[in-house]
Length: 411
Image 1 (cartoon, rainbow, N blue to C red):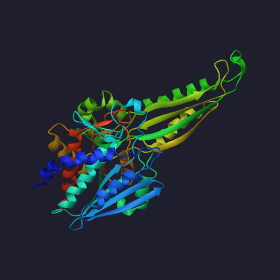
Image 2 (image 1 turned 90 degrees about the horizontal axis):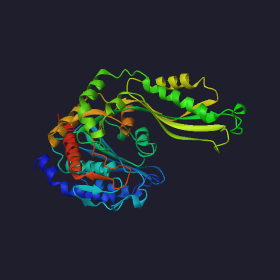
Image 3 (image 1 turned 45 degrees about the horizontal axis):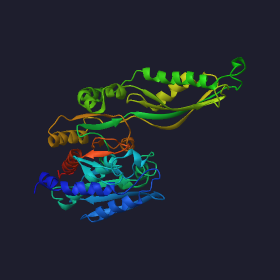
Image 4 (image 1 turned 180 degrees about the vertical axis):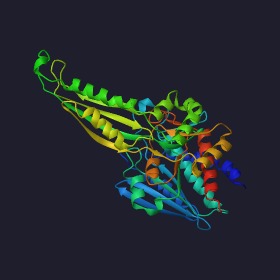
């Protein structure tokens, strides 16, 4: 059979595998991926020629590396997926069983179904197809399944890239949540910052005797939000791809996505201060999520914050988390291959664009590895009745299998 015929013949097994993965909880927190890793490991171990390594970065945070070598020297294609999911939350928020893997009306339900157990199933079935029919392939397929994406990646992808040589390669393909119509080649930079304002407490009737920390914090946050007006010199190739993608991508992700992707954004996520309505607060704290496009660097943003907040009385700020913008050039082979095969599989318009949120692909790009995210649509991701469309599951699997075979074809 041809590759496309074998892909079509595997659809039932793909759905069954995805249901089995959903039925195995791997919530993070607490971050225990032991049970799910055991099922993935058993699947990989059964494949002809597959070498499997288990890497436990900390207790119960199990990472797996499956390595499949073909008939000669060549390139190494990486496929990455995260085993952990968001917590399932209150059962009352679900109409379907949270870990039931129920299929109804063309959708597969359960926590992690779209983020990203459908993607794991697609990667596993891709490995199975290539392992069972390796003719005409060279180099290696390396599949990494990690334990710690939802809480930052320290014990997952970051750990593997830092400590396991075979976790690095020539290109990386991920099936994390996205859309079959949009190939994601980059992500904005991210900075989580905590702003603390100090004041002087007194009775609320005697404002002349105190300094209101909340008012000071409000001034600081307004200055921080001024970052949104910064000009951004986005590289020409990236901007061109974003503009071309806008009509298709915004139809999926919502009107305004282009503006969000092409500008600095500031989201004040938490704020606290004060003890009573008639007491002048002497402290107040806020945390903000700042995202910035390629063309700006983390150092640029930090310098701007220092300038804007440095002169404000009683205000101090600290960095909680950060990473640089990361982009794989849209003209890179791995991007072009995914777009080409996605168009062939879906029969529709497929575009390449930046990704609004971040994923483990940022760590690969930081390591100099061209990386693409191509996965199913995130339906109720993190909420009740999370689900994945079966048509998305089938399309993502078909594209990943075709791209892997094309990238590893003997030359």
